[in-house]
Length: 129
Length: 385
Ligand SMILES: [Zn+2]
Image 1 (tube, chains in turn orange, yellow):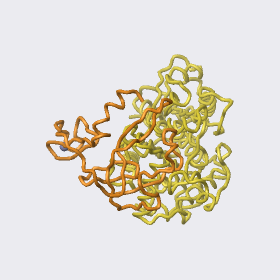
Image 2 (cartoon, rainbow over the protein chains, first blue to last red; image 1 turned 90 degrees about the horizontal axis):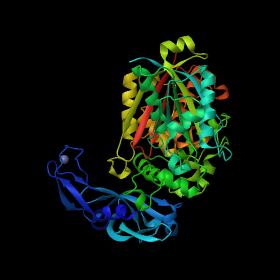
Image 3 (cartoon, each protein chain N blue to C red; image 1 turned 30 degrees about the vertical axis):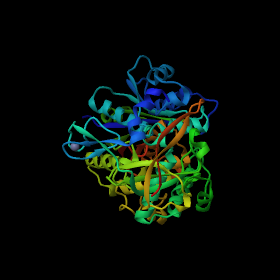
Image 4 (tube, rainbow over the protein chains, first blue to last red; image 1 turned 135 degrees about the vertical axis):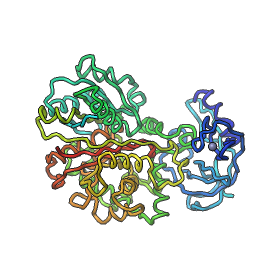
């Protein structure tokens, strides 16, 4: 992954930085240039809530090469307490302990090793709350 | 706007075609379509292809394909909308003829997927999802559809067996299609007990990796009556819509909204209702997709797709035959070619030349082609002339 491409997303991946539309109040993660709801272009920075509820999940048994060492791993769509959905891995529990509706917490973790050099890439994962 | 007809179709056997290149596969089916139509030239060309750059390291298909087709310096465009590239190419050709810009238009779709490893193919396909907020975190396409499947099962009580029945039914149809990649019949038990890919989806819930192409010849309907060798088929509607690229950005994971909107637009344009559709080819990239699509096209109520599939309603001989070709599941899924091949099947059906898988008295057929996890969709409705 080219350094600039990784670096650009750091505020979102490391710090869960989102933006809130100043006109209609809707929160966007990642930030956007225009609000699809009200077409406003003015936003203020907000940090996402770090707890949420699991809406749906799967267990990836056949993963991409950068994730082969982690398979099988669970992934789910989590509705954070401020209403924003994210897709993330669910870790620190066995796949058979996972249920929709369970409470999860965001943690900062290593996500993958990229390329032949195995560059470490970080971001958010979910753990049971 | 001029009325548009399809006067020629061409498709070869799909599969792992190691001895053939992307350009060979495309030109073979283009020549079949040109022969089928009996035309001596084409005025312009559209080729649907998702990612020849990642699969064979080749872009600039407009030049490559018109060059190897020997079509002369015609205007040509490569059309991309992930797995809906083929359907979108059909729409571009439709617009070109309808607008009066071109008379005889070749629409094709192609994908050569077996020149890369399995992991290379997984990567190439994953570029149809949000690279930074889905793929980066480890998701795969089976994973995205598994997330939808779990939601659908929890919300509507759709069962593991109902999902499997989609695959069983489509392989049943593919068994009757000599061009299908995997014409083998399979059972519900085999689907459920095959290798788990992304819970609850197994490998037999997934469409395969395929090399293949399909082509059509379009022209104005007035001209079709005069020049067509075979019974022409009219395109009575073209609908297209988009949705968020990331699945998690949607408010409901059990609805494919791009498909809902594209279908609404197509039904309105054709002035027909879902009841008027005799048969449909839909984008069963995963078994759950077909269940959601037949709901979102209005063939059954939301949530009843699984039950309807189990009841035989969508089987050959049922009230609404779906994927008589074998669908993506059995016929194969060379991503950029799929949307065009769906139209090829409907044309054969409306001409009455589908042999053992012919739907009796088929007059109106529909195709639904979808990109990514449903971020784009193209619906066409066709009628025998
Ligand atoms: Zn707004």
